[in-house]
Length: 368
Image 1: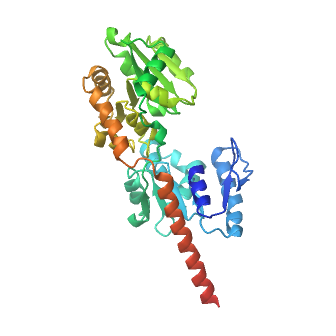
Image 2 (image 1 turned 135 degrees about the vertical axis):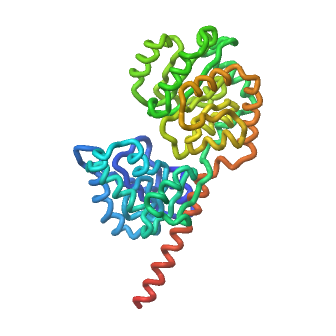
Image 3 (image 1 turned 45 degrees about the vertical axis):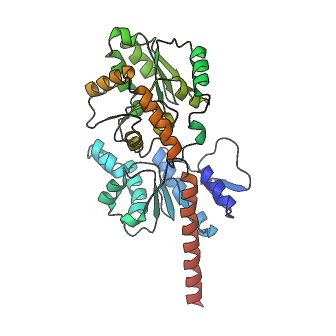
């Protein structure tokens, strides 16, 4: 959001940001409007936020209103989340679908995706477009697929081998050891449990020389207990946030992302592969197709089967193809546009603002 806001500012727009909370430094020359939305539950707070923001948006007479959460009153929606109604109808019982929470989020989703909602839709991949169109009859021409917005510092540098050697020395990783890396919060959703089961299924001589490193923000205790139960307490390390993730990409031997629910994107998948780290990922993740297109790893086909994942993990750890997967990922990062999401999103916002301004001028001329 902030990268896009800065680019819009560079093009001459004044920026107001509406939010329930703000952490970290505040950008210069932007108005941060922190909305005090009270409620007993998250959806009640969200409902209070929507009610509070609506009159502010109308009074502000903005050229374009860009939303990163689903709500009424948007001109453009940045769709980072999966289709809510499709996911709930797939995973929950009919009882859940009569709850206030369900009704609230479906109402807000419908306000964005219904056929008569004049909202431009920016998607991170085409994985969810069919779901939105099936549930809401959203016209196809309202969807705009953005390229990834990967930071270029994730690309393997010229001294990657030196950084790898230093990193492995720092974490006491022996030459004969293998490191499996996972990055991302929501450990359960990202499939950490699946990974631990796959490690436990390895032959003892392979398992004893393997370490699992996980970086993210979540409660580690359930997975530490699971690792102990499986006899993997010495294999697992969990880091609750790091600011040197690129070093882990360069130092590890395999990146795994066996997510339970398909993600609309998954930047870490692309970050790993352009760093030269072979990837094993569930095919339902939005950016998994980059791995297949680049031939930078292996996809876990659906429906997910733990045995299939176990076998793929074991094979990749010893495969002679790992060097080719690494080279392919690095080359893909040099040849493909994986970096221009903020620029393309800003182009769409600027076009929408211009169209809105022209429409307002026509309406004013008609009244005159």
